[in-house]
Image 1 (cartoon, one colour):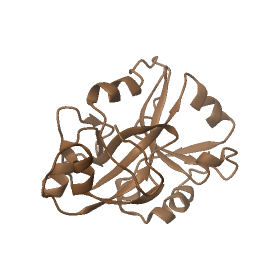
Image 2 (cartoon, rainbow, N blue to C red):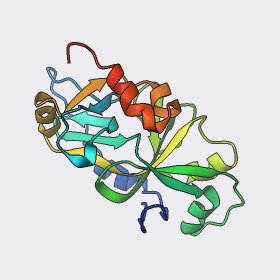
Image 3 (cartoon, one colour):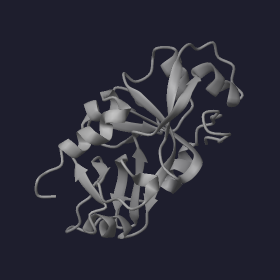
Image 4 (tube, rainbow, N blue to C red):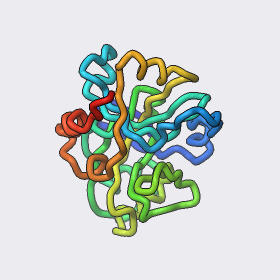
Length: 205
């Protein structure tokens, strides 16, 4: 799990798969329900919760039990991969830095890596055909050794909703959804992600 010190001075320990499994709602959608898993949840201009204003969230899991998502446009600072691994008690001569993102206000001690599907470990969770999530520190080591995914975002914390809570917020137009685009998730400038997502809002929403 990620352990948080003052902002911009994060220490990192990635959550084991068992903790990740506990955080994710189990898939139990009824036939008439529509899962938003793999889509992007975009805060509308009328979002009243200051924690989520101008936020874009990748929905990792959505079912009758609730929803679990990770914000992709909240950078909070950079750390070297070597320093992150050192906080895990592992000393590896790995090179490079990673940007750290605030994934949401829930359990900020939990860490995840969102990445492209060209990389997979035993505990990797597929989100859609293009994007996956891994919570093992091995991914940090592999990134430093140029053996990791082509693209990745390191985050701590997540956004969570109970049963029907997200549906209610959508009905009140706090959010709208768009199809997940790997270019928007990984490549767009973080200060432009929300604006670009808003520009893609379907007219019917």
